[in-house]
Image (cartoon, rainbow, N blue to C red; front, side, top):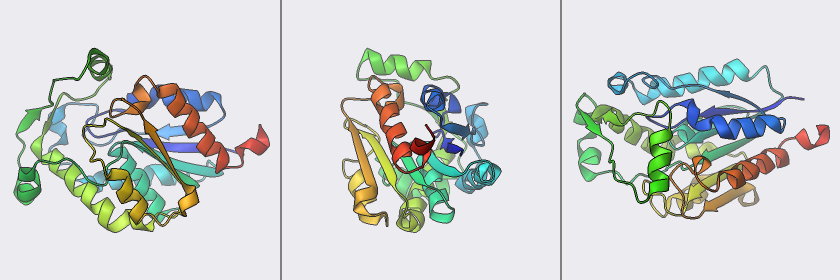
Length: 247
C-alpha cells in the first residue's frame, strides 16, 4: 500500500521550501512528489507572461503522473501552492488536502485589484519588502534557496486572479478532509481567511482540521514550530489513509 502527498511550493519560491517536511514524512512511510512551477527557480523576469492557468495545468499533469503509482493520494501546498492542491481536490480523487498559509483572500493593494486587467501585461519588477519583524524571520527568509527577492507586477496580478478564481469556482467543490495550517501572525493573510474556508468548503465540519501556529512566519513549516507542524500533517495523513494498518 503506497500513500503519498503531491506537494506544491509557493509563488516566487522553489520546492526546497518543502525539503525538511517531506523528509520527515518520508521517514514515516509517506511518499512524495513535488515540482517547481513555470517561471520559478530561474530568474524573476521569467515570471512575466506566465498565466496562472499554466500552473493549474502543471498541477494536473503532476497528478496524472503519480495517480497510477499511489493507492492513497493527498495533495498539499505552501501559500499559493495550496491553490493548486484545492484545484486538484475539486476535480480529482484525493484522500485529503493540506494547505499551509494559503489565502482565499489577500491583503492586496487596491491599485492591483482595480487595475489588474492592465497590470497583467506590465513586466516592470518590484522588490520584495526587505524589512523583517525580527532576526529569526530575516534568517529564514534569506536562507530559502532559489526564492526570488523581486517579481514582475504582472505575476503578482496572476496570483491575485488565481486566488479569486479558487475562491469563487473551486473551493466550494472540495469535499475531502482538509488540514488548514496558518500562523496567528501571518502578515499576508487577513484574519478572516480560515472563516472563508469554513463557509465555502463542502467538507463535513468534523473533517475540517485547523492548526493555528503562534507567532510564526508565513510558511510555518520553516519556522520554530516546524516539528509540530510536521507531526500534525503526519497524523492527518495517518487518520485519513489506511497507512496505520500497514505499520
